[in-house]
Image (cartoon, rainbow, N blue to C red; front, top):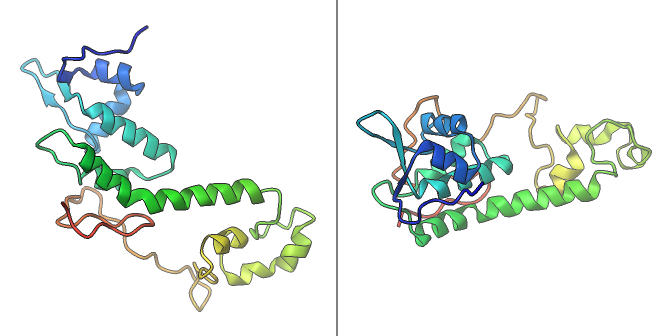
Length: 200
């Protein structure tokens, strides 16, 4: 069955969007409720999406596969113009903003692939190499998590995640309250990379 759409169509139905994107209609309605995509309603109360919603849905699905939270995806999509179809320059700005974040994720996955058969400093002590690399779980004194992976990712991370009294350190910033306005006069901070200096 072909998934091609009429090349002249500027708007598409939820069924057409689901077929062409490969995303279930129920998931598309969820994205709409979450403010990730939007649709207008016809006089018969049927959804009609701008054709460029296909690109937004592809961006959402790819970001989710990378483990990026929906709240962050929503913030990034909020940088796109709402009164016109986003241009190549609009998408390039988002790509540049997320480049460092994506590069960091790639490096982390590569380390996990390369080091998973070795001691990673997680405290399991279940491999023979753990006795040499992490005797008596000494790495646990430097903080929680798989210390050898954490410290390869960030050499300055020794002790990260704990306070002086051994408690859990506070996160860098509190999450936004549920239902809070996600519009910004300045772009939101990327998960790992720096935010762009200003909207263009």
